[in-house]
Amino acid sequence: MTNSSNKYILMVIAAVLLSACSITKKYERPTTLSTDKLYRDEASTDSTTIADMPWQSVFKDEKLNALIQKGLDQNLNLKNAIENIVQARASLRQSKLAYYPTLQLDASTTHSKQSEASLNFGGANINTLTTTYKLGLSTSWEADIWGKLSSSKRAALATYLATDAAKQAVQTQLISDIANNYFLLLAYDKQLKITQETLESRIKNVATIKDLKEGAIVTGAAVVQSEANQHAAEVLIPDLKQSIRETENALNILLGQAPGPIERGELGTQIIPENIAVGMPSQLLQNRPDVRQAEFNFRVAFESTNLAKTYFYPSLTLTASGGFSNLELKDFFSNSIFYSIIGGLTQPIFNQGKNKLRLTTAQSQQLQAYNNFQQSLLTAGQEVSNALYSYQMAVEKEDSRQKQIEALEKAVDFTQQLLEYSSATNYTDVLTSEQNLLAAQLSGINDNLQKLQAVVNLYRALGGGWK
Image (cartoon, rainbow, N blue to C red; front, side):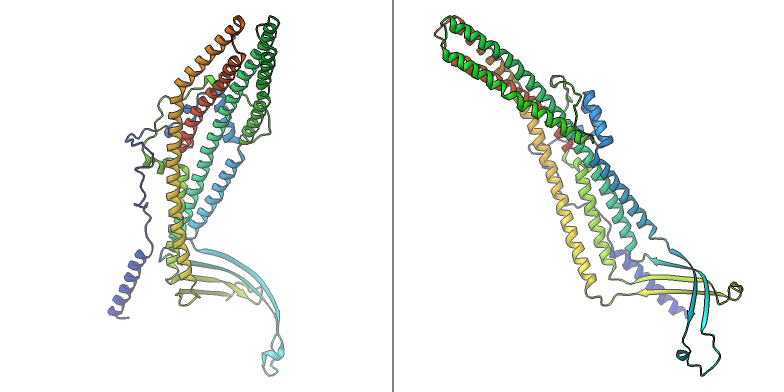
């Protein structure tokens, strides 16, 4: 072969390798994503965020922390998410092994009988009954010229990372669900306690009204109204008990155990972090597991598009086989060696448009994955904004609610005292004051619950709980 021919071959090979570099693209996060205005009315430049705090530091109630730990150990959805990681890890390992050649061992015995008529040897003495013994190795290897195997490996890696992020998302949601249900249970406990105390007070009030009727200070209508007021408190108790039972059962499902009582503290002893910091919106890209999962899914679709492009180019495959083959077992290793080496280059020319349709599908799926990525980021921003505003409104109501309850307590005391010493006082005033007081007390508990759950939801929305 002449030097000019060698140079020509080298130029062709160099051109092929250079073109291979342009077939597949390197992944880069889309620059069209905007995170500046994800938090409504918030423009923080401080990177401090409660998402970086471990959940043991966010929640100070030891009984709640024990429940969260039990949920992390036993929750069935979280266990399934972990198994998904195991499967994705196996797929990733399989994609890495694709770089290596395959190797098969072939050991066989073939016993065959042929027809004399089909051999057409004109009556020659030919042995038509043969037994062939064969022992050999075969191997095959595909050169990753166009990045097909590399794209497959990167797609498998992104799938694995997406599965890991999905597990983290399940974990953050689990912690949030356990904490929210725990605080809801404490709120029901407090509402039940206040309602029971109110009922005891109204039972005494009925007796007092009956005594006042005997003294001709009130009429029989006041007695009937006081009894109705007592029953109004009584009817709230079964509903609260049912809510407590159902919330306990919901918590047990999250803990991966059968229904039963939940050991818990009290609503008034709950402590929340002093500094509710949200950080910068761009931090959601790293802190929110579901956002990270959406980006990894986009990377999978990106690599699938790369992979689809490589099908338009030839594949280079090297195959080799060799071993021993003989008709006599006793002379198996004598003059029985065989081998073959084949280098094949396969260039697709026409395959019913499959390559083009594969690329079109991959590009469309990549666009869908990008849209999902954007959607997850917008949803994350919405959840942070809602939780933060809910917390701010709950804090804003605290002072006014406390003043309302104090005023209603005084109103109840004043109207009850006036009723005892003045026949001009209408019992309807007492009734209205008592009903308003109970409603305000129950609403005050809901305000406290709103603040606690807003902190939990904000912590999850910012991506806390998985680190």
